[in-house]
Length: 287
Image (cartoon, rainbow, N blue to C red; front, side):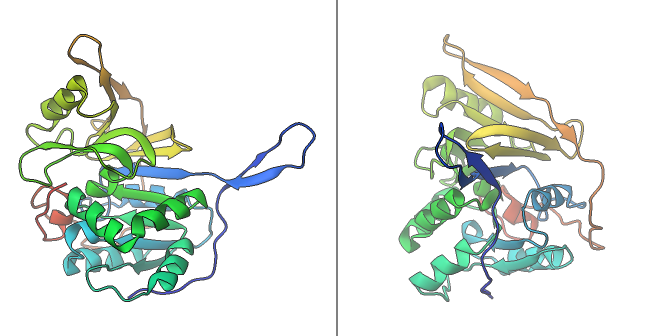
């Protein structure tokens, strides 16, 4: 299922120091998603992600590790993205096909790496076993756009709010490509909001970002540069300690996505089941 591709052209920025020659370096980019092909019937957030690729026909690799490489989840991704102006592929790790050198070449050839939902703790453990965490950091430094939903959003930060272990709790050993913490499903799951706020208030998690379902947030070089939403009701929140044993919560204004640039395939709505986006494809899995 893994396919090899030629190199891509990342988004670049010029850096000039005094009279020295200009150095051109890739821009590090991350997108946190509160929806997408596995939960929504319009793929607005997926088209938004594709629009941020610097390639005319981006290579998009789906990484379904958090769901245990669930076949229904993989099939759903391929069904949706094969109808887009992109070259989709899938990286399975539970039945790994590539040796270390081929795995590195494959991941570094991608324009977008899209990480699916499921179990955040298991995702990080499997990645570290296979060295994928190091390869994704290298891809990030080279300008590949990294993104994901639920567990696929949690993994990039220093820490995250998760139910990987059953009850809602915190995880403090993320990849740290994004400073602070992340909480998905902020509005849609009972207990998420107060539990995340308590973790931030006590210092169990650093200040961070809480995503309601339907939101997308783009970070460039670790700085939030764009927020979008599928519905007027969905928001991204910045949550930080208030210095008085509580938290301060700030809603970040977002641009409303009104229509997809590429028509979504017919029959794309899926029933959501379970805790994470993987559940929408028929696999109940925590974030």
